[in-house]
Image (tube, rainbow, N blue to C red):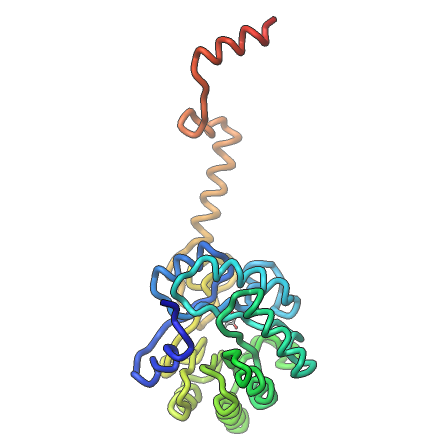
Length: 280
Ligand code: KIV
């Protein structure tokens, strides 16, 4: 049975911590599903960790739909949340409705995520009122990277922390089933978590959140150049992959690949006949 947004809410009510991870393709999604991760986010981090962009802003709805379909195909149990890209829900409630609808209908997602606090409350309210479950996202909201002046920790001053508390309350009141808290001080995240009845899903927000989310590529050590402070590499796939690619290239050049083991053959009778024909 698929995990539902009610199951996610209930985990907080029951005091059960849970994990969430990003996924962008069917094979990874299947591994995550089999590992028992209940919530998979097709994050617009896709732009940075798969598509090679500097930030998430160039990611399009078509990108998210394409990868969401793959993730849904790879899963049987996890709740799949599609991240709504920059400018696909900001212009009007109608635009948000139409594009969230596409994530659900065409992408097969079970919920959508959008960035923003009080300014997005009306959008969240509209979507949830017509049956589209929404995951909120406040703190470091990467789609506002130019406004924020970079990927910086948010909510460090009294005023900024107060604003985060108000944003979180607004997202909950608007009907979101959960909220991502990205890169905010652990003390502020703990306060928000205590005040809300929906689960807080932290990334760089300390241990006081109800759940933790990470970008899968980060915990796999898949990005050779950068490991964010808030992550922990559970594997070193970039180093392993680089080694595999180098050895393959060397084997081909040296004539060590392929061997008979990696080749296909025909029977000696067929070969003899073929040689005879090609000689004549
Ligand atoms: O796009 C993403 O991967 C995200 C997570 C960092 C929460 O928004």
